[in-house]
Amino acid sequence: MEPSNPLVQAILTDFYQITMAYAYWKCNKHNDVACFDLFFRKNPFRGEFTIFCGLEECIRHILNVGFSQSDIDYLKTVLPSDVHEGFIEYLLDLDGSDITLHAIPEGSIVFPREPLITVEGPLAKLQIIETTLLNLVNFASLVATNAARFRLVAGEDVRLLEFGLRRAQGPDGGVSASRYCYIGGFDATSNILAGKMYDIPCKGTNAHSFITSFNKLTDLDNIDKTINGCQCKMVDFIEICLSFKDAVCNLLKVNADETIEGELTSFISYAFTFPKSFLVLVDSYDVFNSGVPNFIIIALALHKLNFKAIGVRIDSGDLAYQSIEIRKAFKLAAEHFGIDYLADLTITGSNDICEETIASLNQQGHSLNAFGVGTHLVTCKSQPALGCVYKLVRVNGLNRIKLSEDPIKTTMPGKKVLYRLYGKEGHPLADIIQEDGEPEPKGRVLCRHPNLELKRVYINPSSYKCLQKTWVKNGKVLEPLPSIHDIKKFCGDEIKMMRPDHVRLLNPTPYKVSISESMYEMMHRMILEHTPIREMQ
Image (cartoon, rainbow, N blue to C red; front, side):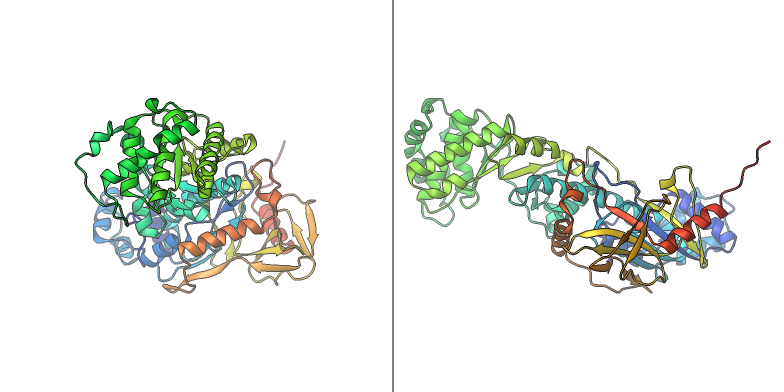
């Protein structure tokens, strides 16, 4: 069970993790029993929820963590020359067999300050894996959340296609984005490598270069192939297409002589090659005076040969207006030629689609039933980082705390258990963080704000659930790892279970993340103990 990406290895870490590990080793603290939490402090995209992703890759990393001889040889060149040989041997023997990982399931809806991952084990080892775990969770959770927001604004009935590889931050960013966008709610990707690696459906048709590469019908003179599944040859297919030209142009009140012959030729070529999945761009020249008429001509020819065209894509201009007018043309053709399904053909919109674009189209009214989304999705253009952190919360049985003048940056000490409390209608009411070993939150539960003393509430949940599981212990995986399709479904179910006002995109209601009375008292006692009393004269 190796990492999916060969770059994910022990040496994929920050230099100061190694220098701290050496200091631990020199002070004989490297084997202290430690506990770290991985969490974030603020939901992204001005929203009130986040989708947790990256867990499987974290598990794979812990199972395989270790330094190679070439890693050690390199580290010797960057560490001080007097580094003790015993530390070098320690690094060479390092593995993850004594690391325990607890985590919330991948695809879960999560909230600020909740321990997404908790790791227990030797202090130096947990320090060394910090950067890698953060790297694996930060972008994965961010882009999955972005995808989930696109799904929410588009609605369940619209197909979402991820087209972001060419705009992604390098090959690793492109493949990771495809994987986690699918989990977040997208239906397919254009990224073939991601499709191969993660069993994601692949979709794609053609670009403007394909359309504009054809000039005249004579470009097809030397082709004599049988159309897929039919005995019709190219010469015959061209004749069938041309037989509908005048009728279609008259119906749509278009001058047949002004339609672009090269565009029609490209459509014929593509339909002849892919008669079962014919979907083309119609905005290479003129949408209404060439692209749409030429498409309908081909759709009618395919129908005559018992094939069904899929639809069109528009990649420029006023998507709302164009889609409505294209739908009118499809309905007109369906009625005129007596072919009902033509009215419902797919109209896909692309062209720098962002969350706000889809919201605006919904407000205007449109007839699109699919979106191809790239740059704004995979680069998370509106917020490029989630900001997960990884903090020490216990060492050798003693709770540890990090203070800050900014209350949100004060850590919550100790190993924790996270519960979700549900109301009578089945929606989550609040999450509560408890100290490890506290009783389960049965009956009337006092939920306290982590920082504000007077902000507290009693909750009588109809049910509750512990969100964490132990995934790795003693070098073994204790829970079955779900498939990407199961994670995708789980993610969708998690979002549907939330109260709509918590996940709406504009002015969402904050979701309550509280701590128990015992946790509150312990935390604030430690704050007082570690805050020096100032003197004034």
